[in-house]
Length: 188
Image (cartoon, rainbow, N blue to C red; front, side, top):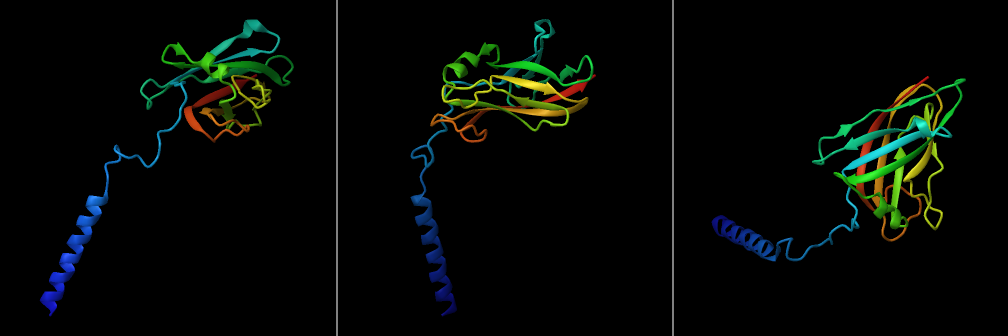
């Protein structure tokens, strides 16, 4: 009986494996998940410029560039707190590119579907706020006001997400188009 039982179990296992294998489909034939909707903007490069408020001659631009998606050329953002040591405000503008082709105009034309966020700043030395808005008064973030509060270092995590069903001012929903971490240094 043991040999006969072992034979029956072996047949059942082979039948189960055969049934399972024949029921599997190639994922290209019938995808379970539709492809992600990324819109028509791609980006692997960011240029972010800072101008001390009221002093247009102080323009400085910094770059993040990841041509192959893995290695990145990253500038350190350097801001100076001048004068009496108080808070210095900087107007910033960000430009998204795919290599050398600018994508920012497309982002701004569809501003109800994109959001740019600046996170992980050390609020003791750098703060951000006053973003440009879409028609629903939800932040777009291609322009912002930074405040250099104290001397120090840190990094800014910059993300741009595509949210085609509408934004609520949250950074993470939707499809991530680009994410960059840029170091900064504030000196007196």
